[in-house]
Length: 243
Ligand SMILES: NC(=O)c1ccc[n+]([C@@H]2O[C@H](COP(=O)([O-])OP(=O)(O)OC[C@H]3O[C@@H](n4cnc5c(N)ncnc54)[C@H](OP(=O)(O)O)[C@@H]3O)[C@@H](O)[C@H]2O)c1
Image (cartoon, rainbow, N blue to C red; front, side, top):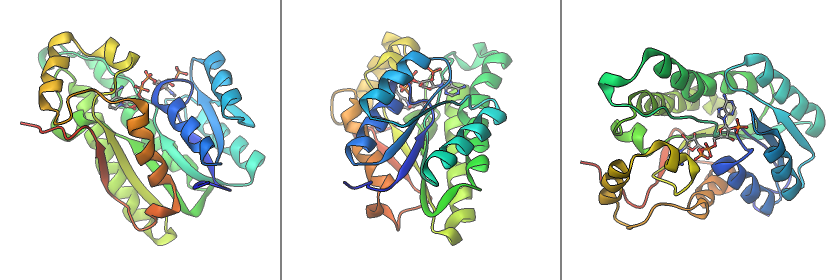
């Protein structure tokens, strides 16, 4: 019951880590708004399993859908306490092969998308609320074969810090939760075998993460237990030791 009476909206909660965070928040009694961009059917399945009263379309590239999603959430629940900026994509390529189109696409979703959501939630988010941005180990060290992704995630960490400064007077905590490598579809699609091998060599705990490894920190950062933690990056990465 650590999130009792809290209302949380999670971008990209139709599947993957976002869906796992939705489940974890619901277990702690939060009201969860499930959002999707393209995976509508999956989003409704997630909503059923977390007994969500609201499923909305939210494309982080489209400010109107963001505005509409926050407005509907507010109209349904009367408040928003927690925003998790989880939606993300990757277009892996070596630095010299990354196209400008791929670069712009990743920056638009993973960085500008977070900027848009943070701006648009401002009129609705409660004082004492929480914003959690899902970063990445790549953003902490300029990860391999992911120039646009690493830059977007590192930029998100700066955004976290800047916004935490802006929202400190309202006691709103803004933090980055930075996962290492999660064993899921995203990783399968975006990491070549030799990159996975290299990533494994960085880990102190010799396995890739599960969603269960991630959601504890996501609940903690959303709960009152972390009311004095802001502008931080919480790395959940098996002790990745970056060279
Ligand atoms: N997997 C990893 O190893 C790993 C490691 C570090 C960080 N992360 C980060 O964790 C987050 C979640 O990753 P994941 O592994 O769960 O990926 P995933 O399984 O591919 O899920 C991505 C989610 O983002 C949503 N999304 C994509 N583009 C969107 C857009 N334009 N607007 C709104 N939603 C959009 C998707 O929604 P639809 O399906 O509805 O389109 C989906 O729900 C990302 O920010 C990722 O960078 C992942």
